[in-house]
Image (tube, rainbow, N blue to C red):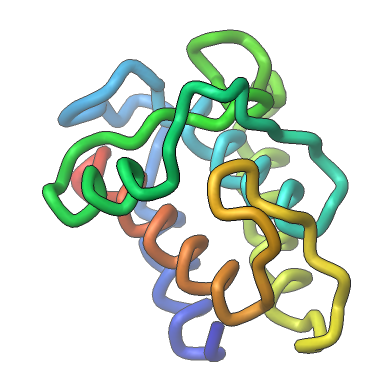
Length: 143
């Protein structure tokens, strides 16, 4: 992620409040912040996520291209209860920003965790997925 992309995400995240209502989906704004942080943790191998065998990677790609909501990998589901629980808003927002910076500073040869649907992924693949994911969820709240 470039410095300008990071700053753009930070500006958008700073516009979000705990009172923002979702335009779609079941998560509230605070859950979404923790969910996005969990994805970064998962990419870096500090949060476990897995596929319970119900999801075909080709279906995920087709759903994404069609603009449909993609099933959440097990371990990241806020509504399902297996994601990181929201704590204090300001702390959780700060953690998200810190994880964005930390991820962005990783070298290309870092040992990234395998994605439960797409298996081994390099930094370029994870970066594309994280940017897509952040855009999706900030858009979920009209940001």
